[in-house]
Amino acid sequence: MKAAHYWHCFVGIQTREWLRFWQQRTRFASALVRPLLWLVVFAAGFRAVLGISIIPPYDTYITYETYIAPGLCGMIILFNSMQGALSMVYDRELGSMRVLLMSPLPRPFLLVTKLLAMGVVSIGQVYVFLLLTLLVDVEPPLWGYLAVLPALILTSLMLGALGLLIATWIKQLENFAGVMNFVIFPMFFMSSALYPLWRMNEASPWLYWICQFNPFTHAVEAIRFSLYLEWNPMAYGITAGVTVVLALLATAGFRPQRTKILGTQSA
Amino acid sequence: MTIEARNLSFRYGGKPVLREVSFALTSGRFHALLGPNGAGKSTLFGLLTRLLALQEGDILLAGQSLKKQPAEAMRQIGVVFQQNALDLDLTVRQNLQYHAALHGLSRKEARKRGDRELERFGLLDRANDAVRQLNGGHRRRVEIARALLHEPSLLLLDEPTVGLDVASRKALNEHVRHLCESDGLTVLWATHLIEEVRENDRVLILHQGKLLANGTGSAICEAEGSRDLAETFHSLTGAGSP
Image (cartoon, rainbow over all chains, first blue to last red; front, side):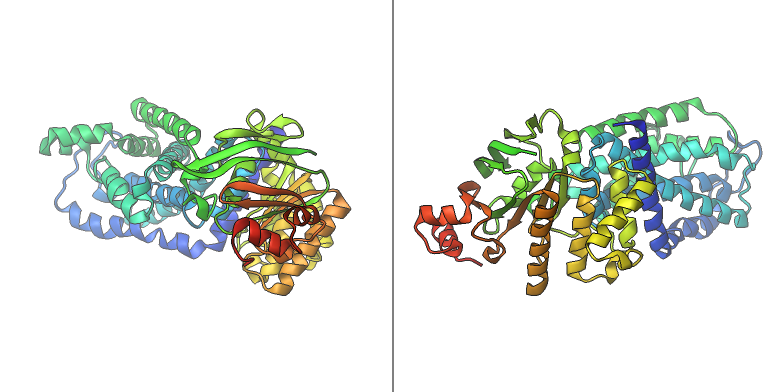
């Protein structure tokens, strides 16, 4: 297999994802409602309760909306990745996965490309969301929109791989409600998405440490820092490391017979 | 290309689904894999398409073990799954291009081959229609056209006529037989419908995970001392032809 084959395959998978996105654009638009509700309603209520001091990467007092915007970017990717991974092995995407796995290219390449393609669509949504946050005066520097891109790609690959790993191996979580309760919400709430971790430390040190061990925290911080053109090697390093480990585990441990890809027989 | 299965056994969590299945497919011929529901046909297809990992035994494609060259083997195989594997919202051409890309073909080449196949299948005028607008028979044809895009030498079809009306079933069966003759394709057509099988076909009868018969339809009938395939099938599997 030559590099050109890999390239055509990569482009083909990306193209298909965008075509699907375009076909179902109303569904994707409605997926923006959730983070917008958090931003507008939740933040309005919480702003009064929670004072934010000056913490890096911010160099001035910020509104609560400004604080949670990067966390909500992470949330968009978190929901999409989990939903995407589940649909890959249980429902909507089964047909396309069957076709995908008939490719003569190596399976890890196919799976990572597929996760990246789904991630790119999520990232498109993140950018639309960031544009909308301008309405509530969340105004990162212009170059921040570009600088945040690698963090968004890493986050989407990390969470996609996690989703695939869970969907393949944890039978009890084969529906979205289960994943929401046991994966999405704990990851989201036990992170720095909604409140700075020093606040969490004041409330409960052990919760603080759980948050520190949550890779989503570091993904959100990588997004936050790069959006404000600050370099956070620890957040980036942990996110990248976890991404590599999860991607390896998810692709090497992928077994079609543990999914519904094969059809009714494997159920 | 020669295809050989050697002593295939497979278990789902302790329950045997295939037991020491061995056969060889003759190059350029139509083979019917006949078996009642639950006989192990889909498992066998899962192994041939490497969606299932081999547990015991081996599959050889042109002498190459599927264990050694698993991915490369997929270049030689075209597959039509039992369940629809088309994106209903995308057009026929977009579906074909996705498949072609997965096999490393450029867009230009994909378009050329796709149009060639669609023309052959009488579907070129539907190329820009969403698959959703096609009837069941036409969708199946698109899936076969797609399976042939990368020019495989073996075409696997897992109960391709499920959900089609009698006329479409017959047409699809004829169509694949024609491909077999015109392209020299080796075909393995799994079905539980005896009327899709002819006396002069190579027939493999699978029942409860065991290969009960393997030969031309007429030879099998002769060996069983029965009048036709339906009777043979009935006496071998203890089931009426559904």
